[in-house]
Length: 473
Image (tube, rainbow, N blue to C red; front, side, top):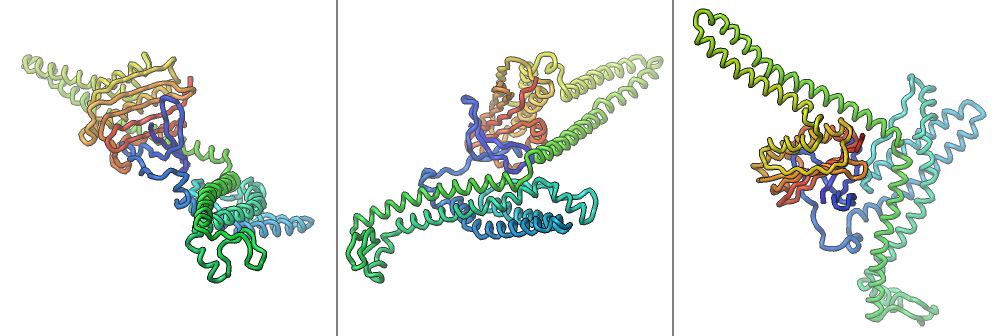
């Protein structure tokens, strides 16, 4: 199993695990390939989730969110209904329009509070919607922009719909929680009833004169506590379920629209692609200037000197020509390496299998390559896959002394409409994601084509990096 993070601007992209055998993802918290090797696995719990839920902070934060939702939702509902009714009554005059805009703006203000509560208490990760901006400055352009904004109207809808739901969630969560904990702790406070209320225990039936059925025997007290335990366990999951509905309401009505989020993501990806292309051009220019260009310039000077010495000292001229011949070979090798770094000819001619085998033959650590592809993907995807494996193998080689890796494997296969890459080394793993090093910009380049990067580096190893790319023909 390996853990991944979606590599886009969205902070929240919930982590998942990938199983090659099943070809599916399962919910599991993970880490991204941020700096060399992935983070170690999270701590293991002794108790199963069903038993530890009542004492987990997540449950109590969700409970606090549901309790706070009632007063806040009442304020939002009253504000929204009052302002909207006032605006509707004033629409016969021009004053209704700015009042309606003020109502929507106020609802957006409440939305800021709700998103902050969702982040703090529900762990909700979402971006803020785009602010309202008119094409021109002034009151009228602002009013027009607010009224045209779909986000503003969704905030108004949230203010109206959330109040009845908040009342229901408040009553259910508080009743179940109070009843469950009261019955669970009944052995601790049962003595209060005979001392201060004059009855032996909780009355299942009483005629008002001290006669009835009371829970006062040891067995009845223990059974009451057991029922309370069941209610506590049940209420914890009910509270989480109610909070999940709140998460959906906040994310669906108070967040940016999916189209706007996608546009923002594409704009960010476009900037990454432009920056990456500019960095690659600078790298090529630097390597040409410092490598082959400088060597060829020195070669021209040496050949000029050899030409001058040829009439007077043929032997010295021959030695200089021989040295120049060696320099030409070196320059050709540098140019060949540079061309391979731009786009290797073997990848274009023979595909990923041959290209990755060539990379593996030059790796510091022995690498076994297995490619199972029914056909070739699009050239752009094929190139990204090639350079991704190159950077991962380069990173393994650079860290081999630290991780004590002695061998690595590269697996490439197709799963449905995705191209899958998996690079594994037998190092000791457990590296911190904040460690320096690692392939610079790899995550951004994968994100630019909707790729996913997966890492798993438990203490003791092995380290596995899985990359998922869209299959395009």
